[in-house]
View 1 (cartoon, rainbow over the protein chains, first blue to last red):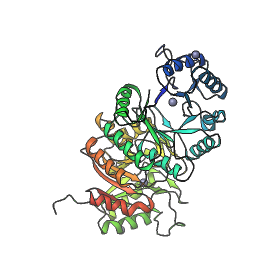
View 2 (tube, rainbow over the protein chains, first blue to last red):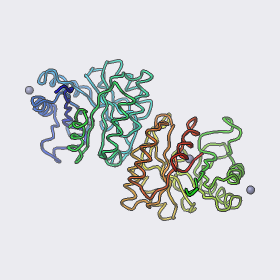
View 3 (cartoon, each protein chain N blue to C red):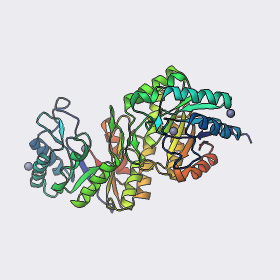
View 4 (cartoon, protein in one colour):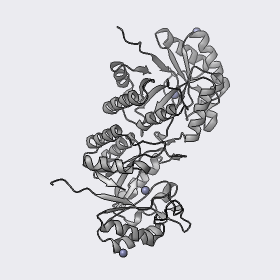
Length: 227
Length: 227
Ligand SMILES: [Zn+2]
Ligand SMILES: [Zn+2]
Ligand SMILES: [Zn+2]
Ligand SMILES: [Zn+2]
C-alpha cells in the first residue's frame, strides 16, 4: 500500500443527541474523555468536540472546552483536537470564544443553509471574523460544506488570504432540508474540491442513516472519514 | 428547427437597483409597464416583477402588485406575469401577501444561503406556507436555486405533493457569497434537474457581469433565459 493513511475523525457528542435518545452518548467532560480514548485506542486520530451544559444542552463555554482539551491531551497523547464553532451551541461571536485556547483545529461554516426546523445562519461578517480568529490563534479550519457553493466560497477565502490553503474540507450530507446523501453530488463535490482547493484535504459525513454509506464512499475514493 | 422555443423572462426592476445607479431602471408602476411592454414587443414572454415604494425601496404591497398586473394584462396581452416572493421585499408571510391575486407564476426559494452582506433566510416553515398558498391560488412556482441542494429540496417537495411536478426551475449564479458563475457547476445543476425533476422546465440567471455568459450557456444547452 502506498496510499496516504485514512484519517478517522470521531464526532463523539455533537450538539443534539441526549442520553434519553441513547444512553451511550457521552455528555459530561469525563464521559467525553473516556469515549474519545476508546476511539483513539482503536485508531481514530481527530476528535471533533462539542461541549454541553449540566442539563445536556449545547454550550460554547471556553472553560468547558479547556477542560476537555486538557483531558484529551493527557489521555490521548498526539490526538488532534478539533473544536466546533457550529451555530447550535451559541450565537454570533460566542461561537468563536474558545479559539484563543489554540486547539489544533476548529470547524468553520462559510455559508448558510436550512436545517430540519430552522435556518443555519452564518452571515458573511461572522464567517470573516471566525476565519481571522483562526489565523490569529493558528487554528487549522475544517470547512463544513453543507452545500456546493460552500466549497467555492472556501476557495474564495483561500484565494484572498482569509483562510490558509491547507484547510480540511468536509462535505456534510443527509441533514434534512440541506444536501441529501447522493452519490453523483458527492462525486461532483469531490471533483470541485480537487479543482478549486487543490491543497486541501477532505472527508465527508453522512448524518444519520447515511453515515455508513458515506464512510464507504470516502474510503473508496481516497478521502478521510468522519463518524 | 424542431426545438421548443426559448422563453425569455425579463426581470424588469429587481429589488436593489435605483435610478441613481442607472436612470433607465423602471421604478414606478407606469415605468415598469412601459419597460415591460418594450420587452414584450421584441419577444419576452414572462415578466418577473418586484414593486417599489414611492422612495424606491423594495415592497411587497398587494395593491401595488395588483396595479402592475392589471397594467401588464392590458398592455402586454398574453404575457405571463411572475411576482416575486423574495426576501428583499419583506419578511415572513408578508412575502406571500400578493399570492391571492392569482398571478400566473411566483418565485419561490426553498433553501437558505448567503447574500453579499447577510443571510437570505427561507426557513422551512415559511417555504411550506408559501408553497401551500401557491397551490391554493393555482400559482405556478419558479424555484430559485441559489445552490445545488435547493434542486434536491424542490424534488422532495414535488415528491410529497407540496409542489406540483411542473415547477419552473431557475439556477441563480453570480450572487456574491452564493453560487458563482461556473460552467461545471451549471452543467451539474442541469444534469441534476433532469434527473430529480424530470417534468420541470428550467432557466438560469447570471447576476451582474455573468448575465451574458449564463444566457449563452442556457441557449446552447436547451434552457430558457432570464435577463
Ligand atoms: Zn459538530
Ligand atoms: Zn484515560
Ligand atoms: Zn427577483
Ligand atoms: Zn402600453
